[in-house]
Amino acid sequence: MRNLFAFIYRFRAFLIFVLLEILCVYLIVRYNTYQGAAFFNSANNYVGQVLEYQSGVTDYFRLTSVNNSLAHENAELRKELMRYRTQQLSDSTNLLDSTFYATTDTSRTAPYILHAGRVINNSVRRMNNYLTLSVGAADGVRPGMGVISPDGVVGRVKTVSRDYATVTSVLHSQMLVSAKIKSSDTFGTIKWTGGDYRRAMLDYIPLHVNPAEGDTVVTSGFNTVFPEGILVGTITSVEKEQDKSFYTIEVQLAVDFAQLSYVYVVENTRKEERENLELEAGIIIDEQ
Image 1 (tube, rainbow, N blue to C red):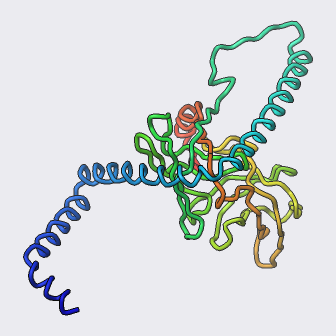
Image 2: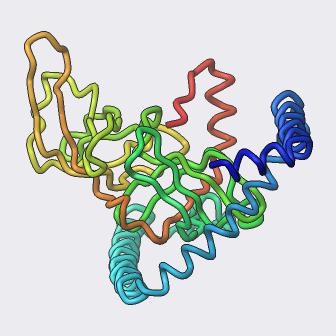
Image 3: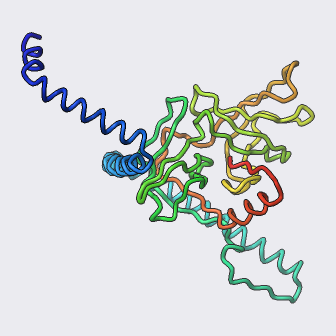
């Protein structure tokens, strides 16, 4: 302890200089918009590179499970594609008769574009949890885009740098997801209230509906963030309280946030058109 005090006393001038320099940098970054933005963008890039390297080492030992997951996902996608094509051919034969329709506008035939990204940082134990992805503006990712995984809804893009993006997780106190009960098309809102990262609450389901344990909850499609029908979870409990106008419903989330490796950022090519129209009509846009 004596040596420590002697060291501090000997280099007191230098230490005071360092502290003052740190204080000056803090004040400049804190109270100047340009310098603050430049500092945080640079910091995000360096931290992102370190996290990406760390995540790469960890993911190396999980390649088998990741490959299995991708193989199952591809199988499901191919099955859905075949089902969709069969249904499309049937519908076109019945409805269009001998009339032929064609379009070259890909945004009409495929309004959603998926950008695959690797999760390089993630948290599940806090009240407000975030993810960091290894995709950014250079890959077409923008703030406000939805994020999904092969299992279901993950969150929404918050900030973006050139090569990285941060995501507000569903496990965030301010994150709301417009959802509906698939069997009845009754819509409500998914909100995580803390605690168990595998469970959330489904709010605003009226009492005249009859939800049941085991019912599937999916996205409603009532916003420009998530496509309709993306899996959110399964109802695990339904309570009807005397002093409330809505059910108290608990949902087991489909996504295991502690095991996320790869996700898809959802780009809605019709987002701007719809939002501009609703803005002109005076409709309040629900971004969640």
